[in-house]
Image 1 (cartoon, rainbow, N blue to C red):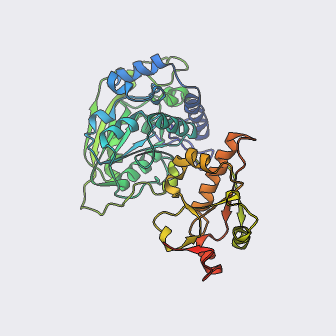
Image 2 (cartoon, helix red, strand yellow):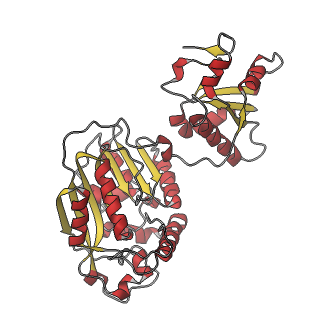
Image 3 (cartoon, rainbow, N blue to C red):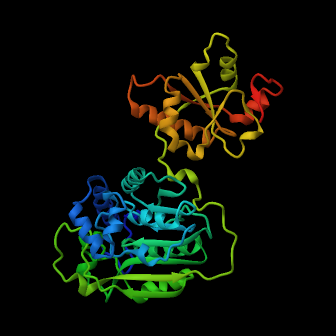
Length: 422
């Protein structure tokens, strides 16, 4: 799930993972887990695996069916001692089960963030969140490669979870990820990882088995090597607990021709980040918009003079144009007279009601401070929404005010029919 491509297609994985070319592994893993996200798994199989690895019937009933997919090797939320108001990050969040369970524990004042490299998995998790009425920033799912800098602020997270994911990374990737986990945790923060660990060095026939890699076997690291990675990342109080569960691979195209439990086991891993108290950032996500879909459309820009002319045109009906200020904290510094305020940070979640209000308005013009970020993004989200409704269902088109409010105030200084201030 959280696999990423090697920079060199001829590069082979480091010791402790498959000896097959990295590009082959990436293709197989990506195809397998993306297909699961698109097609789903049998509910009975997903339920049996989840129960085998510690999820209760009550927990499974509390999340959408598609949130648990039979990909677990433990239940990290049950062991994480999550408290109300905390910020939790789940690595390789899949359909979202651990994020949803964590969100119940952190409550409305806390945050639960899922990271996964698969666009299909992120889309699935967001659909599941919608079913539960959960929205950013309380619950967010973000597409991210786990062997690159995580899109999370430093010293911002109380607990990092992961469930049968880190074994899918090459050894170097594991080291990079654990250092990133240490960076994002607050001093005193903790990790609770359920993962597959090698009981003894894996033979070549297992290392070279791509199907075994996809099934979380061939990438397993020896316990001592895993502990060394955690220590190098800066963690202390490291504890490994062999759950002694009968490990059933999450993806089973064919039954392995070897005894899986002889070579690998399901472990629960704990570690702490020590250090002096640090100032916590106000948010955990590095970019709030990462919690929402990327924009597909490219709305046109309109010059300030063109918009002003339309506003001043006595023959133009007010319903023919709507000007949308997507700023939030900086809204009071001056705005286009008659504009509507819809903050970009919550705009995507408000799209259905926004559409109902403005779907008959031919020109809907968005702006922010300079219209090179929030304005175009919100306009793009609206245009994508319009495009999804189909022809004949609306009269609206999204535009962006070129130069934003900065250019507007500079261009029309002293012209009170165009400028308003709170």
